[in-house]
Length: 422
Image 1 (cartoon, one colour):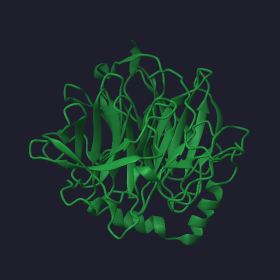
Image 2 (cartoon, rainbow, N blue to C red; image 1 turned 135 degrees about the vertical axis):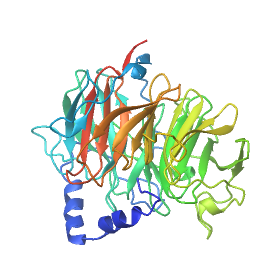
Image 3 (cartoon, rainbow, N blue to C red; image 1 turned 90 degrees about the horizontal axis):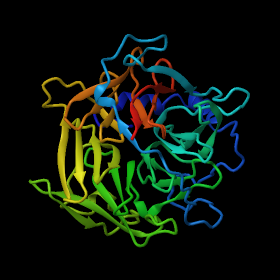
């Protein structure tokens, strides 16, 4: 994710310079798709993708097993392995993909540069799919890796292309992926992890510098973060439910949060969520509360957790009480184990896993007790960030990427007792 601190300048300078090298990356990143049906969306201008007239993605009713987190019992990190990965005793690490290299032996599809936000989806055969955004300028999109029930890589392919700086996003309860463009006038694209249906742009989710999205499957709301120093916290209220029984993303009301001194939240409808006029979306409601660099977001058991990297906060929005509180503040922590807060995911029992952009290059769990527990660390991956943390359906495999740095974009799997069956 783009940082809102002074570190952003050299990073963006690197990304947007060297056009000859970038052209090579672009040409390689879109080559070798293993699925002819991979989604082809329009290039981030807010026009609808060619989805064959579809307005809703199909609902794949594939249940995940009930789990209980065992993260609280995990011990300290061990020494780095040959790939510079530190994990606790009883855990193993492997690399599953590298940027600009084939993912599956014997298949030509190459993993995208700058892997970012990600999620997993259970498949009908007992396996699962891990999807990952590409934060590459001008040719971002989304890649997917399919695993069988034993965790073996069996396929990899594109599910979105032709978009720009796809940063984070979020899974939906009907098993699709919302991919967010982190650019001025950015859009959200709904993608099919199976690559069988073309992606659909979702203008109703607003036009702004999108970071991530989280769907409340109970109250049928979509919460969104914005990566700007004066960004907002948004909520989409659908006009109707879809055929799958969840939020229909075609139409609804986009709202922005005003947070009172006591944490109480008032939601205000935006007059121009599509940013068709002259006033940017975040500036349309004067009372809106500003958040310094909104990053990862995740819904769990009625609470929406989200990070703001500009002030190193992890916040929790209680959807039932309509109140925001601070879960973690690195600036006031006596021992700031966690800094550079970015992508988030949540365990089955409410442990909030936060990936670091910089910091110690760790994934750190904030336990319900408030205790911080590092779960993995990358050593020798300077000038990078950890992105896309996601558990597989069994809860025993954690996927994430190192986005860039001396070793290039690298996607990892950590296997071990993060969860047990409920």
